[in-house]
Length: 505
Image 1 (cartoon, helix red, strand yellow):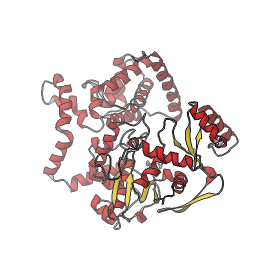
Image 2: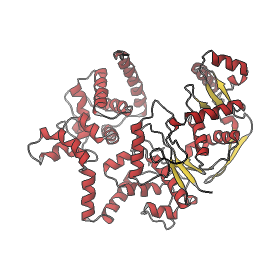
Image 3: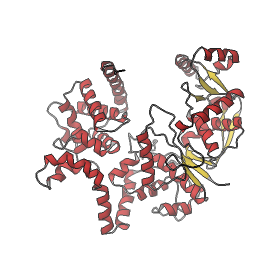
């Protein structure tokens, strides 16, 4: 048997270090066993998925040296490798499940499902679908479909007994079927959900080992049931521990930068990030901290994975990066590395037009454009002092701005400008005053070049990281305050949408 593993990210945001972590362990396992490693794009979420996000995933993983044998951009015998291009395949398998009685059409409205959940919570019952539409006859189903009623397709799930399965790391696991919801397999728009597409794709792409995060353990019964319904042999299951913040909470961008692009723009070395991710719950047989990808592959054994939540500590990552820079890079290699990072031709061509009209001496460049080749500006709370804005107003401006900018699918000056301008107007601030805290957070000074252009050039990851840091410098936002502000922003967004002119047909 040829070992085949995969990574299946969704192109709905920044390329996540968690994706790289799972990709690394899948790659090492496949290579160590002489097998293949695949990249599949799970883009069934049509509203949030984007081609730019997909390309950033490709670029980020390749920057790390985590190359794949089959995928959307390299092809292979089991394509297409984008789920959005496999619609007919999923429809055929949904039809098979319906014909065999393993799935059913569900016409329940959102209102009914909401009321059902409320009632179950009051009665302290396990939330989940109650099988209401299972009672419909085939004639009733066909009649309602013919009348144009929208429906999803759910899978039939046993209501008694337990599902037992073996995990490569965790041994035997049992989950009561009562805890397993009658999962939607196909949405009303005809698109499959993750659960159906994942199983169908893994089988057709001959995946032998599914190595993924532990958050998917509770989904295993659904997946194994689908394998049973189709009469397929399931792959070996292995669930890795989740990456954690230093406080042991799940790794999140609110507490730790999570985007691979952030670490790239900050000046971390790709081999260091791979080395550090390899230390997340795994260790070399000789216990050393410093090792290459090739050395990890040669020594890799899943039995050495610890189930304790590995802590992703950026301070330790910085220490390791410094160690590499001192031990692996002599003067000439360091100069070449820094030139490539800071003075890439394409990058400089975007910066120069922004600063050339503002300088008189070449020595002015550092002061005016230093933020383009820096990690975080050297600022403290005093830098945000403003004649018209109180600190609380500045915190709110930065937080609302961050939340709105996190929603952008396309990161460019026009989209950024439109977002900031609309929010400024909705919050009742003059645009000049509104932009002030962004200048400080992004550039460290109100005297820099256009802050909107700077954000476009710096990219979404570093820009948003600087905004989060500025908010923390100003005291942060408490959970209670965050909830209140989220409600306030939602009301503002609704008002902005209502005030927006109708789009031309």
